[in-house]
Picture: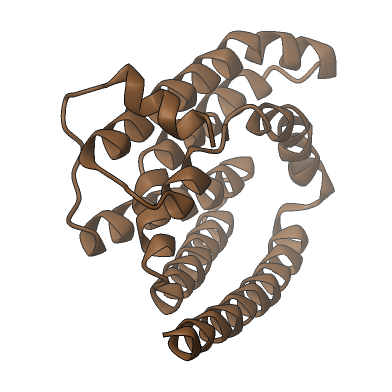
Length: 212
């Protein structure tokens, strides 16, 4: 049993390394090409948004995914509680970014940032929808599958961004690239894992996970 666990762990590390390497390499290539097509001004607009969205992301993860992976006895009520908690957190962050979008635009004196920020903030909701699915895949150590999802989402979203940039969509190509990666991860992870949330939330189950 120990040898089997060790082997699966080493395999997981290998797939994680492969995924990181391919993702970083492809992202670098696409970023160089997009920077050439779009120019520094467009990248600067998205960079202004990422300053705020990156900070907000720190409050989006409260550790429920890690609790799902580590918990010895996991029941459906735990998964339901984790799912709906993440959805609420993701929705709250999205609404918060939409609310402060005018302030961001005013601060940088760029009116377009209002719409760009509001749309890119949808990523919080989309990401929240597959947190449990990813945690379940990690729990059963399906690292090869996770690597495939991550690489696939990076490639598809990168090509989407590149196509839109060539079509003349400017900063929206970068927004589409960001959201595209999340949407691909959502669709594929839900297709692979047959678990579905119920319209149920148990406070005790949440406390048991949050205590982790």
